[in-house]
Each structure stands twice: as C-alpha cells, then as structure tokens.
Image (cartoon, rainbow, N blue to C red; front, side):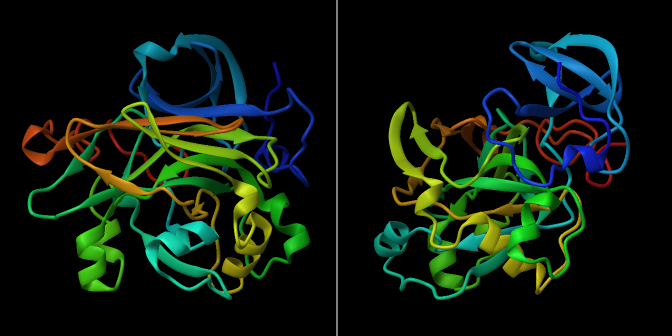
Length: 299
C-alpha cells in the first residue's frame, strides 16, 4: 500500500501520470476523532496525522467506509472560485470570453461533504448545479511561477458550485447567491498523483447527463490559474481552488440528486432537499454534520 510520509512527501514535484500511483485520501469522523485514511474499495486504511501539518502514519487499522461519517476533505481558510473558465459555458451564459481569470470567493461555511444534502431555502428562486474540478493546496503559495505550481498541490477533488441564479443576476456580486449554507458540496476525498490537464468531467442529475466535458477545455488551465491567484493572494495549505464549470449547467429542485464524476478522482453525490425537510444542525453547524475540526486537517 502506498503511504504518504509527510506533507512534503505528499506533494510531489509534479503530478506523476503512471497508472496505479494515485492515492485517494478521505477525511472522516470516527471514534470521536477527525481522521484521514486511504480508501481501498469499501474499506478505509486509517492514518494518524494529516497531510497538511504532520506525518501520516499507518495505524494498521481498517474500518468499513459504510460506518464512518465522511467529512469534506479539508477545512480551507478560503475557497477561491474561477468564473467563466470554459468557452461554451461563457456562450450559454451570454458572457464574453475573459482575458484574465475571473475570481470570486465562497465561504468555508458553505461546505458539505459527499452524500450530505444541498438545502434550498424558501424564496431563493432558481438554483443551479455547477460541477467543477477542485484543487487542494498542500504547500503555502505566494507569487509562484507556473512551472513550480504543481509542487504546491496536494491533490484533486470535486466541488459543486451551487448557485441561486436569480439572486446572482439581481445582486451582480456572487457572495449571497453562491455562499449559502450547503452550497459547496466538496469531496468525496483528495486524489494525489493525477495530472489535472485532461480529465473527463460528467455531471448527472437523477442519472441524466447534463455536463460532459474535459478539463483540457479550460480557458486557463490549472497551472495558469494557481500562479495567477498566488500573485494576488497567498494560498495556504488546505485552501481549495474551484477551477470553473463547463457548459450544461441547469436547475435543481428538492427531490433531485446531483452526481459529479471526474475521471480518476471519483464521484461526488448529493441529494437536494428543501429547508423545511432538513435535519437539525449538528455540532459542526451544517445539517447533520459531525463536530467541526479547526484548520485544514483535523483536531
């Protein structure tokens, strides 16, 4: 079993592309603790430590993935999002092709995990899904050149940039429309050792394909995006960059299920419910959440 030995070891100088070298880390709550482990089929090999600020040490213990509470892969200080990063999405939204990346932020309080519910409050109007490749930062990034970017990346994940479209159009600014609680499903884990340049992204709603594209269709690829962002704001370990959504975005409603699949990364699946049907918030704040860890890793 391939193991990470330290944060520096977890972040290779470049993404290896050879088959079988990737590692899927999952963040979960069990035994009263926030833990990381390596997903192996239906089992999780449990580690001590976390990939951001300490060693990951194999415990020799495994646990069934069915009996743990899966958490968002990390607790970022910020979620940096990129708008209009696929040409056909610009066309469908009636926006010009950008000449520089268009950035906005989502609050970490919007995060929910794989299989947690997207909760739609009353009176928000149309709500859309947006499937996106997410990049998880492993080392601090400040003014990093493009050729050095991937040595600062821990791995890849998936984010659904859920958007209250009517509010977005009314406000112009994106904060309210995209920052609501549960409007950033994120997961299921972090996949290391995978080249982000050309991965297939497919979003399904109730099993019907709505988005089908490749990351090679990005206007600004991952290296360009992260270098650009790092020249304006420091990216800390555990920060997340959502790299934009392809064409095919559409409305969702209570009773729907959204599944975003990215080649080699996995599938992020979330049901959609109305606020009146949501369970009471758990100790972590979001409906049904486990106690919240502080910082990018866990307590």
